[in-house]
Length: 139
Image (cartoon, rainbow, N blue to C red; front, side):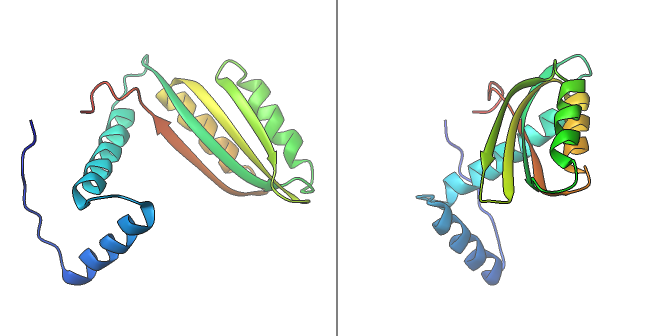
């Protein structure tokens, strides 16, 4: 069952939102808003996860492979947490930069700690932890 709601927004904010959803390819504002709500609910689910609940997240890292022993440091962190690393993908973006994509599984707090530890390693240019969910509680 679909419920209708009304949302009031400033004109400039709505114009920016329409440009954003147009670039993302949404057919309607409603679907874009539903996705924003789902994302907020996943974030809440992760922040409220009980310490024993198993969670999965994707971690992306971009770094210069020529950076002094950075690749070794990142590999060392992964090996120290080998039980949490479900999968790893290494992509050569250009002659200097690499992208690593890791799938981590474990207790939410531990997965976040590991992901943030990898991202904060000196020499990592950009990184992000993306919590995943089965969507069982999202409709």
